[in-house]
Amino acid sequence: MARMNKIATAAGTLACALGIGYVMQSTDAATARYGSEAAVKEQELRRLSSENAVLEVEDIVLTSAEFSAAPLEPTLALPDSAPVMLAAASADEPIARPVPAPISAEAPLSQTAETQTCDITANARPVAGAMVNLTLAAPCMPNERITVHHNGMIFTQTTSEKGTLDITVPALSQDATFVIAFGNGDGAIAEAKIDDLAEFDRVVLQWKGDTGFQMHAREFGADYDSAGHVWAGTPRSVASAITGEGGFMTVNGDLSAAEPLIAEVYTFPVLTEGQDARVALTVEAEVIKANCGQEIEAQSIELLGDAKIKTQDLSVAVPDCDAVGSFLVLNNLLQDMKVAGH
Image (cartoon, rainbow, N blue to C red; front, side):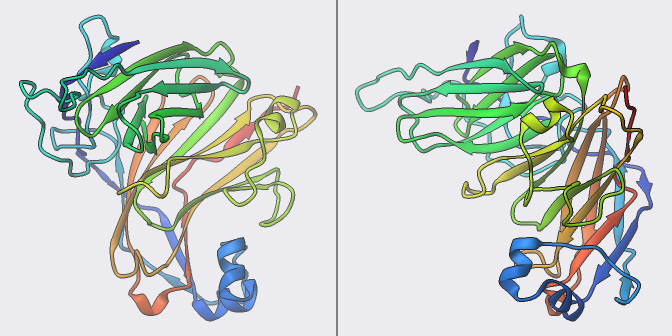
């Protein structure tokens, strides 16, 4: 554990354009299929059928995750003893976003009128399912927005009234390091050894703000809204992966925080008893008032088998607001998981 007071800037994107499939289901079709607006909100996207007209949309840019020096969400400068992989300009950092101007290191950041110092500590403890119990104690930072950084994944949380945080987070590396940063530059670092990481495949979809993005996993040929359909609406639990039933989804981030950063993570056990099949993964987005007529961005992080982490940035031009209530389906963005039985 360590404490820092210096903001560093991370990276932006240098991209090469790729193509992916993209379809839109109309509002009338969505209403007819899913019922009232409340039902749509509850059930989200269901299977597109040949009976529904779809609109081909081409304004999509899918980019590789190579980075330049554009500013990103603030992180912390690390001590000389910290692993090189955690440098703020790491190629694993997510897409570029504007941040407040750095605060001078000469200005005391954690002092009250009585010149009291705030001690910030963090701890990371491995738990079942290649997950990490991440805790933070910052007594003089109650109800504060923080960002959690881990191996390219980034999301926001809010401390409690006592300045604490206690969450469970998916690990993306065996030697897992978590950087927790406050907006003023204060923060802490926590580390944990994840011995069971190789037993699970993991895919992350992350974004900023109210974009309408969703990640859906359909296991072993499952239809939408069936037992094998896993998404934020039916996320399952870690126990599902441990017992071999299937995968589970976690939604990381505080949606009520200012300019929230959200990371959905789907986890699937590498070996599943008696089954040899695929898990179909799709990225989908609802056209809502918050995103209609705008360009929305997301980033995917894939950790599959023995392969290195793969990241891709996505930019989508959302249809105008007369399409509110429709759904976008982005095909071929995420690699389907190949699941091998015992």
